[in-house]
Length: 436
Ligand code: HEM
Image 1 (tube, rainbow, N blue to C red):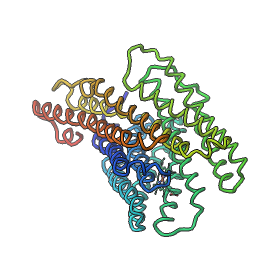
Image 2: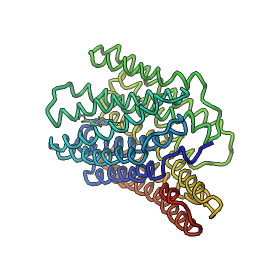
Image 3: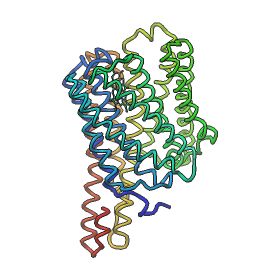
Image 4: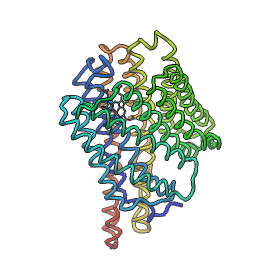
């Protein structure tokens, strides 16, 4: 049972959750301004800026905020000074993501230097706080193992990202193309997929009422993927092309296996009433599976390898299709639950606390999800035929980000109102007011 003293104050994780959707909206705005030119190549400044608005501004921001929130519950370790720790991560990460996007757009080394300083600080603080907690975990469950692997992968991703940034900011000499491939794989396969897997082991059976993941999978998947990633990196870096290609194929199969296992569990739901976040999980896993199969086939087919559209599909499917969908769905579970939990703990016996569905109605979740889905399909269409689909895709992308933000801010707004009204009814101690 979750105890109120164990969980960080609501403001600590919430600051990450309410700012993150703005970054999806910014990516949409950037695509509207740049138009079809943004899709000319994955290396265009606007494409790299949009990639990091999503991967750092949205994904990393929510994933780290959620980790700070989850650690006491899942791992049983309290992060010290939660408000201060959250601020030390959130402020530099937010400013750093904006500065990195600006640096890609204007190409000025000073902006890269500023962005690297901020991101180094934000990710550094996060890695220290979360690592300390994870290595002190009293019970080493499958989730803890996966989170440790994901955190290790984040460290590699950030290290490689900072070196790449150093290339633009200070003129470091490094093999940019191969380092970018490694940075991308550690970011999307290591950090993102392994973190989602670690969280899925807990939340898919709990929220979607499915059987548990097979226990061998829970303990073995993440470490195996981390070892394969390390082997693949060494082979790619050393120029052993065929061995790297084969290891890459095994990695892609591993990712596909996680997606298939999750999709299979979702078909075995014991609850027959629909859950609006189920569609997020299904879309996310279908995108992951499609992306993994495309990644598996591309190196072996000249036609796929030469098609510029495939590069885009290999970015859109894992980033927007897989990661953004599952994070979007998780936010809808986490934010209303946290608001309800904090209200319950502070107002118990004094005022009536709204239910989670009153804090965030299913209809609001469903409507935003339709816009998300439209954005995904339009982005995939834009990758294949940019002149027709880029503007509608950009507008839908901006729209889904704004709508997600509005839905989450709505929960925060009701929370504040109910808390103020409830506390006005009966006197409380200073300590209780502070925790709100
Ligand atoms: C400290 C944080 C980070 C920095 C400084 C950074 C920097 C960079 C740079 C400079 C590039 C472009 C390389 C080039 O043009 O050759 C790049 C590419 C990329 N980064 Fe990051 N990155 C960071 C974090 C992340 C994270 C957390 C992810 C998460 C998944 C990520 C995903 C990507 C992807 C997918 C690309 C390839 C984009 C493409 O090929 O179009 N980055 N990064």
